[in-house]
Length: 313
Length: 324
Image (cartoon, rainbow over all chains, first blue to last red; front, side):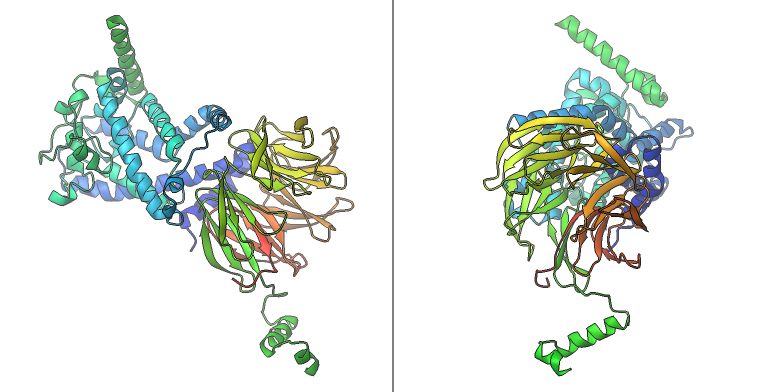
């Protein structure tokens, strides 16, 4: 059966992108560009689906009501930049040569990144199961990335931008400092050297995972029940992570999709409270500034933190 | 009629042939056999019954397969899975997986005409690898600038010619000395490469032409306008027509192989890419952005379509295989 989103991406690629690439003398990127169009189409679907579900939910059972919601507008901008592929594309273009050089260097030194199927041949031919296993492993890897980002002051200086939002909504998932995103990219790149990348043919499953992450930030009194809370990260569970008192090193509930890692490593908090969010230790621009002001404030905080660290040394 | 039965022609087959000859809506030139279509973004290989022209099943790959090539002994069909870092060996008749060999980023791959070497382009690592075909051991790795795309050989197996999509050049590797002989500019984003009549032809995807280069020096001696985004080149089995797919204009062009003059332009929307030739005279063409394979009837210009997976790329027909 034809995949309608793939066909839309194909149509856009053929009628808009290829003529543009040809006119600009950029046809060497044509093959890769097809993948980016698909990324953008599925990103648009992700945003639409999240909006369709989360917006009514936030209207129906809001944790907080705000008269002025301008701070939310910046988060919408973050979401669009990230989900339709603008930021990932810029990152890709900037670091493409580095990535290719790294690929060649690693292969030259005798390392060919394996896949999970190399270690577990029984997975071959069971691509959905393989995807699920990758998703679980990468969620665990992300748990540790996230937990460590709260541990080191210099990293927290960047990650605090994500926590600065006092008006947390489903749009807040993608509000990150670009350097924090870059560190995440390197983190997962290193993991890919060890276990390869997951099967790429399930954009709908990726969509579901991203939806859970967005939903977990929703300004909604939603929890999944005693059992459900222990299966998938809920808005209530993740709100505890964003709580004012949990900012920085004292946080809990680092998991993005699965709460299992918090349960396993002793950081789970299943309190039923819906706490206030934000980071009082950061400057106001991190919370209510424009996209650019927030990025600059993150850099300033990083600079100050590094300065303190140097003086201590 | 009696003659037909003596020749072993069954009644249903005779009815089909008669209907076909009278044009009663049955596809002309019914072929038997199996077609393999590599779905790059679905990580699979579609197995198509060439008779019914239906997809029968999909062989799972690991991550992102692109091109495929038949082994010199005809016993294996090799499928390169770039992101999966693997070459999968399939039974060319049934598609059964024979074995898997770990190879980094195998994009385009081809055996030298003498069958002794396998050359693999590592598109995402700027390297060209030369393997001992029998032992599948690496003999030599060349670092190139940049994005090695397609390749072909001189008939004596001495040279391999590789298009370097990122730098707009063609590279010639001496496979006897295992050295890079020359690298010469041929045009923006070169893709398909083919040896033809003591020259090397290269499709220039960033322009609307195919170049003819001198294999000794790499200098371009001739340009043939085919259409925007010239991407791949395939020689018909009778060697009378050179076929060119143009990615940006969405066309397939037939050139007189003798004169290299355009014979006809066919509109094949959806990103025409690789081609293989069926015994009934049709061309099977992958359409990258349409999840389809086109079966082109060159005489009428009509084409049928078969639905496959995402981003169909390489394909190979085995008309001699039993129906899958």
